[in-house]
Amino acid sequence: MSARDTYDMHAFHAAYDQVMSTWSAPVEVAAVPTPHGVTHVNVSGPADGPPLVLLPGGGGATSASWYRQAAELSRVHRLYAVDLIGAPGRSTPAADRHPRTLADLAAWLDALLKGLGLAVTDLGGYSYGAWIALHHALHAPDRVRRLVLLDPTQCFAGFRPRYLWHALPMLLRPTPRRVRAFLEWETGGAPLDPDWLALQEAAAGFPALQPVTGSRPAPDALRRLELPVLLLLAGGSRAHDPAEVAARAEALLPRVTAITLPEVSHHALPLAAPAEVGRRFTDFLTRSTG
Image (cartoon, rainbow, N blue to C red; front, side, top):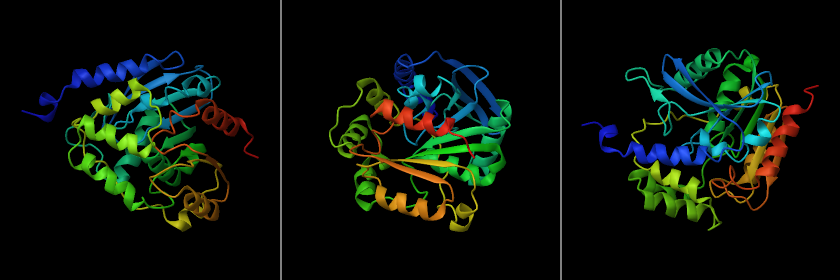
């Protein structure tokens, strides 16, 4: 009996659909075949708008995590919110060719962009998704027009040991109770959307694959990245030191704009201050590249 046979996939999909029912813009669904599996993409915005591809964080984040920014981000742009291959969500990894390395992730994203018909796109990511987005911009800078990184992890600084210590029980044996306890700790007890929290809890035990991990991008490679980068940091993040992340990014990236949103935690960032996050996003994306 497989993990998918024993996991309550119906409950997960119901929680996913509940969050998507509050998606703040009309949404279409695309299922894009790639050599690494079929990728589920939630699509919003004008068909002729400039494309914006968004990658979620790890764990139970899923593409639904952009639901509060969807209206603002898709007002002008054609928004493509992606469920990562092998992670909780509606994407289906290939049984024998799912991503195992950073090169596999790059090949998957190359194939996804090709399948979506996007020769060039703005690219954004949150947390682990920002790590993937940054590596992809280094891999294919000619395919990325602008890059947005929301509190990126393992890009410019490591995790705080205390964060990893608190995450350890959830990582070793994920349960809804452990997921909730961890999120309540990291967000400092801030009010959390119950539908979003229910989705995080429903993702506990999802039969996901081992996520692809790796080192931070090489400093020399970052110094050569000439495209504009927006770095939006959670000032109250317990995942890492936002001041250290900003300082290292500004020292390495030639064209970075670093903004810290005060009193917002790492895991609350996609939910908190949606108007502020959306405004910063759109101001940056509509600015002339010079």
